[in-house]
Length: 576
Image 1 (cartoon, rainbow, N blue to C red):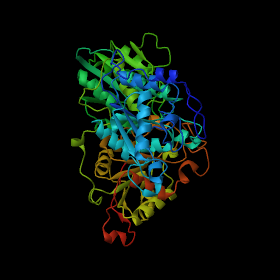
Image 2 (cartoon, rainbow, N blue to C red):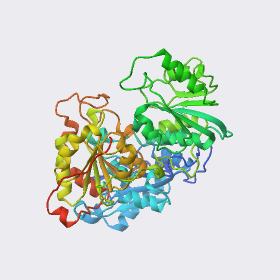
Image 3 (cartoon, helix red, strand yellow):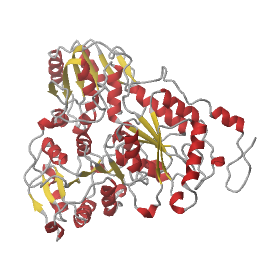
Image 4 (cartoon, rainbow, N blue to C red):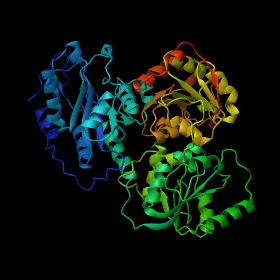
């Protein structure tokens, strides 16, 4: 039997093919089931993602699953993941179909693809200004509640940019499955892109597997972990370090001078060794044989039973592995594309593009360490070590704007930062401008548009304390974004695309990304802007930042005296 042809109908569908799609949804978890790890649930857009997009469809006969949909969903079910549908259906508001017709269509989807644990539908039109219509995050929050979890433990699969924006604004992961209707800019801005729904399911399960240890090894003695890089790099390694700490008696961290302040704030560390490594540091000194000898001697004194070398994708662990071997450490694990010879006992591989915290967790898991079930895989700080907030910041609820960066390409252009302060202040937001000691002129200029200037007064700990009391942080791709993620503070990310957003963007925290994700500097890893005028960020309209704050649910709370006119206040500053 065939579906009749007609205007707007999809191509004919054989009913015997549909029966094959409709095999039992009672999928028993088997060998592919994993501990909860990263995700509890997968949220899926309906039209264009699960089924072919028929505009304003109210006819169950027109429902046709995308290729491989049932198999992909069954794999996710077998892994123990709960499934929900999150879908905009403005056809209800427009009168194109009734609620009864919509329910019949949804029932047909379940008949073909198996049952879903929750259906979350927005019935409003775009002019209604509701909080549930994607790109607003309302449907993601509602689905997470219905499934008994949180948005950060969900991944949303969809076919347009609104799906990815809704996921990020709720703090969920996002995977874009483009269709011919997906715009190129939406593909460029997506944190992760899959070819189709089966490929998205494969990516989800691969990421879950990466952070799952092969077994449950006995508790080990002293473990040396290494992450020698900038503060942000140390912060994103935090989940991996906590996983090691959960299975070790003692954890010693080797870090560089730039990362020391961040290391002091991380949980799970018993001892810190601060030492510059010339093959890692951005501005390295020549290799000094005597210094390397002293480092090797110092590593020997840790009496470590094993070492785990955390690196970024462009760094080699092998020079440090050689020193650790000389220091007599018997078991060494690292991610390495280069042949390590006998320098590594565990040579781990990870796919490109996964978030840096998951990269660290995957290496820890390969070495036999995973986070305990009561420890979420997001970033975390020792808040008991945060110093007092500098005087002048004001009561909690302000918006922090951090315009600078140690890397030129990642900084917010000063003209844009000034305009952002002016627009936010006029809209009733109290804006606190932060920056390092060498950025006092920048923060004074920016804050003069109506903000409070904290330029140059604080270290990383004080900056964390300031961000902890903020309603949101507006920042480029730099260390403070990871501080906000560790503190659960929403981020408006002015993200220059020189490195992948899905790998380096704020992790598991409500975020709105702004900027031209397809700019010519994309994936160049440039530290100086290769295009005059910094167009990937300078073209951002300040009103987009205001819209982002409202999408994140950050209220304006400035008193009337502030709204009467912009007043710049000079009270100090913050290290970037």
